[in-house]
Image (cartoon, rainbow, N blue to C red; front, side):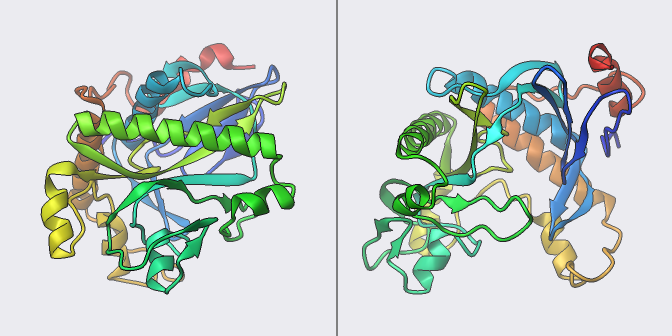
Length: 314
């Protein structure tokens, strides 16, 4: 199987390795971001999924190009299917999730909080009597503090964001306007593809002039929850979750066999890895309406990425 497990090239400056992405900061203010095929969960790398990095990069590219009229973004160039050259931004310390449905599994999701009996959250009050996966009257923003030091994100209200000095009022107004408009475009286009964009995460930063721009990725299967629209009504009436691009096969398989936070991870079957790769490819094709064409040039994906980044070598 062709995978991009790592992309560390000593010829490139200022290397930083993330869980999934390899990053290099160029002296002129540009950043090279390489999406590998690593799959991260439980605060560790579980395995690599063929073509995952290409799927995420190209899905984000599709959405960046479809939303550039709404919000400026960091993208400058795509020298390789797994690589984006972006403008280096100062990332704002607030992570923005826009939600259109009462859904989610994390401790900060509105469904988790609602099940605990909370009705006032993120500066919004939800009505009594709502059911799992019910559509909200209108999308809401659920901001959290961005934990750069590896700590846990904490829920915030718009008033707290400003009073704590995380953002100015003008920055919050701009950021929230961008986020809601991006989500509206995403929901509209997803509906045309037979999908429901349930919720999504956005990351924003400021450029050297202080302008707010969209960073990282947008509306990918890793940053967003999609449901298959045709399955929603029956699932909601039955109290079950609609069909989705469920990529949690690997995570569930590992969790059933060990304590993934403490134990050694057992060898993950090749068939499971292959099935997960097919889910990513299916997600790309249904989200974008395009046929996924794997770039199998060069002997390995790493060789291809290295060749395409040679003009940036110092």
